Image 1 (tube, rainbow, N blue to C red):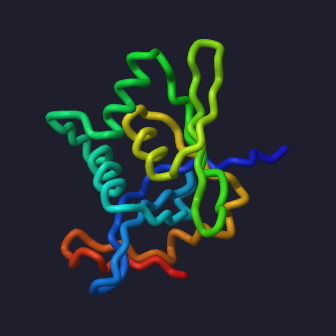
Image 2 (cartoon, rainbow, N blue to C red):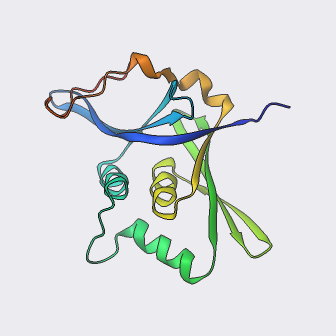
Length: 156
């Protein structure tokens, strides 16, 4: 039986588009580094994910840091997050939590799920039903460090 989930990792957070028409996107890449799932997110979520990727620890906890601290204090483990589907052009996600023998599934935004997964070291998965929304890694031009911000390209 084929696994219905693909293990993903965060390729990065990028501002895409040109001129005043720019959006933030988190790019998830599969284990083989062949397929990318672009998820457009808000600016605050982009900042939070980027901070986690860079290991930036704010003086006072931001929202995702606070949630991570709460889970830790309550001895609740974030086992994994799944990007589950697309409803009305909006991606859906689930937090898979464990407290002792008790298992919980909590509906969440993908951006929040990814931000928490990065802070807790939890794995990220995408449902195979989202394959049609993934693009080949080779078709995405990511900006070089020397290039102007916002020159990344995600094909339609």
